[in-house]
Length: 459
Image (cartoon, rainbow, N blue to C red; front, side):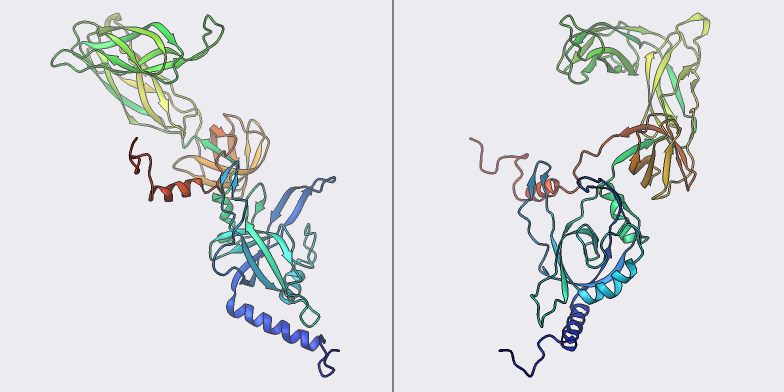
């Protein structure tokens, strides 16, 4: 029989226990942010969440139960690699939740449960600058002291970002999705400026390299070996190009040599040099060279310009007296800057320095995208939200994509009015940002590095 001099669960006794627990959490705990999930769209049959958002963050004191480090998890090896889920167990006051977070959540749309913490809500843990998702809420531990419960134990795992909208207005929280979980990366061309280049003239230079046999089954570009120029001259340099649309006799296609573009025509040749293709895994390719006096020399890009969505047209001034005119091809990088000009035909008979003209970009970019704003493609009509914008590289990371962007889309920001033209895009992020393979390999290399040599000796 219970002691009759104690009430064993009166409101005053329970309030005393609750006050003591609240005081202990405030003394020995940490300040976290509780972020309730707002459900936007759900499937009606299996109640799968399609869209959700996190727009409110409430500071709250919590005691870290696993104070000696992140908890272990038995499922660390999956088809995506070795993953450290970093479990976190927190204890929060039941009274603080009911009198604070519950009251602030009344009337907020799309929050389905406000009477207690719920699975799927997020915790921002400032000590590690990480977001955790609540996986289980334990509300009966300790077990009914003085006939009551006074805390919630939150069992959390590192949050795996998918397609949620995180916009709490607190920078330290919102920036987590800017680096961990982008869905698509757009490569946009920069501000439109015209590129420029210069070239000289040479005697005894390689004017043209003609393919006499394309070969077949090349797996990589072979090196183009050009015979050395005589003493006092300079050996020419060329680079091969591929074509993979020609059908072989067996009805299959494979990489073949399309041509050789001249990087440096060289000079001082008195007879046409020999051409040999080395490496690349294929066989059969062959070519011949022609030399001339008054050829266009190395074309040097003096200003790469910007804003090129496609490679610009290179025009070389005509050779005098009906001689052979030179022509060349420009190459641009992922942000629309001309990086190189290779010679297709170095021409012949030039007596004065040729003039190199590069066509102007057909579009230009302007402005700075704002994190979180809506961007729209001019051709596809696709919309998305901005996660981050890197102007020097022209990379726009986006999420919550509605549709499919296409090359040539002019991407316009709704708030910033920034406009840039889309050149290329990645359809998926195939790298698992949460796998620990790279970290484990780097750490293991400090102990054993078999890429250098076998530390146990070779057999």
